[in-house]
Every structure is written in C-alpha cells, then in structure tokens.
Length: 78
Image (tube, rainbow, N blue to C red; front, top):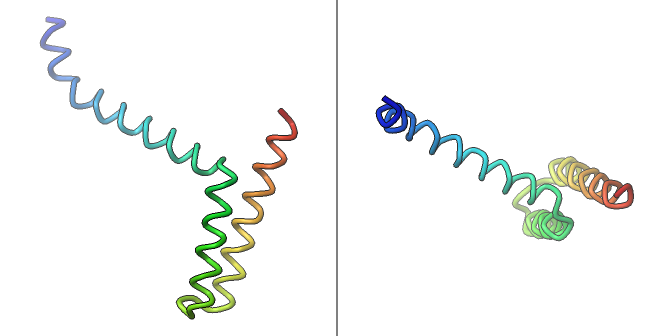
C-alpha cells in the first residue's frame, strides 16, 4: 500500500521540491546586493539606449534602490 502511495505522490512531491528550489533562488537573488546593483546598471543602460522612457526608469530605479536599502538594513540588523 505504501509503495502505491509513493508512486502516486511522486509527481506531486517533485513539483513541491522544484517550487521550493525556485523560491530559494528568488529569495537569494532578492537579497543579493550585487545582483541588485547589476539590475540598476542594466536599467541605466536601457534608459541610455532609449529602450525605456524617463518615467519608467525613475519608477524601476526607485524600486531597486528601496530593495537595496532594505537589504543593507537587514545586514546591519544581523
């Protein structure tokens, strides 16, 4: 009986495992100061190449700077 349960639940367990790994990667990237700085540089490059307008640039830059500030505050509080 347990073997059948394991076989039937294997796909679900695989999906849960993959979901947890994706979540871990997202959390790592969102808390990596270097990755945020790289995204800021990419954003500036897009703005300079006229791929985005100034309003879009300002909005996304503010989001990234707030995220960077939050990361730095969390590191200080540790």
